[in-house]
Image (cartoon, rainbow, N blue to C red):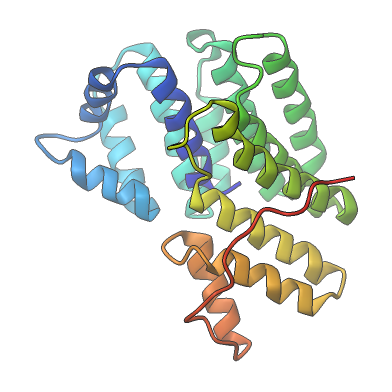
Length: 262
């Protein structure tokens, strides 16, 4: 999915692995002085140009190998957000995987698959996703990470859409919505909710599936689902698309999870 989509997925995973103090220390690697709030704001708002500057600043410093690889992955995410997919691929190919743990390599594979799909190489993207799922399945402690599995399913949906396999693309994107929606319940954490940026993007791509089928009414409905998250990049894009169609955007339809697949 969208670059920020993967960036937020990485932050979710990192939160499980590190303490609050460790997260704060890593955030301070990105920016000089007391500007962590500025970085956080850019992250939440999906301000990709600012994020690229922050990550390049971080990479200009001497970093521990582990931190360098994660920041480089995040730089690639931000570059994808700017549609600089070739540059994003270059950054991903600079990542040294031997410094990463298996689930982080799975995340890297997912990010690279996303980039390849947008570069018109969906078959290669699908190969990466299969490898990522195998890595997760091989580690019982992390194999049920719903957020990352949702990311993989969402990326698969984009790749399949680019291949013209609309039925499988739709099922993969619907599954991504379901997996993230079920993630909080699986962790028994009532405060864990689906991320609105990822939700909006998945509904956006589902609208593209409907449009490719010529189902304009369904495409509009799915755009309204995305527009229910107006403070995300794809939510804002959906609202613009609806305005271009002459449709109201002041009261978008609440985003809902799709019905279970059969």
